[in-house]
Image 1 (cartoon, rainbow, N blue to C red):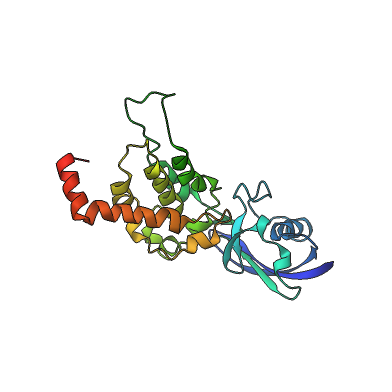
Image 2 (cartoon, one colour):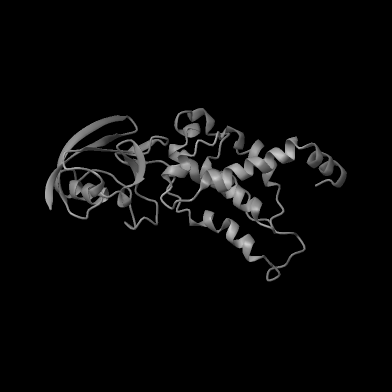
Length: 248
């Protein structure tokens, strides 16, 4: 089945832009990225879009479709009707470079700020030992493809650009939580999560979980448990006393 679909695509750069309407052929089985490629080939050869694998595993083609953060290569045209007007816009939380391409360097800056895995000083390579349950606990978080949809939809970043210096966003708070769960990691993740990476800014609306293409339960399995561990460290009187007595 083939039909002429109605699309509204944002065109512009750092200096501004606007939504432009296009009529593009749609074929059975296609995804939004197919339509963007056809639009490039037939009507707008200068349209900029970032993509790579077209298999939902590289995270490159992140954009917003009808206002919802999505991977263009995983958004099937069959989810829309032939009469729908489909709007494709760049990620709103990050500066536009050109058309659908945004500058996501904020995320790489935050990634470099997170201290790497820190084993005990007296533990040599080859001596690492972990229980299978410890491996499984954090395995979910390693499915992240760094599409940054969670970063984009988090209203702490999306609606308040001034929060970016103090807030790492759900993707990197999840990374901190993963390392904190590691039985061989000795870095102080909990105080850093709160004081340096803005864990307290998160009010667990679960919007990050809702847009994750890998279906990682970011809020329930990473952010909420991390908040609980931070609260125990700071406010539980018995934990506070134990920290004073044993200098943990």
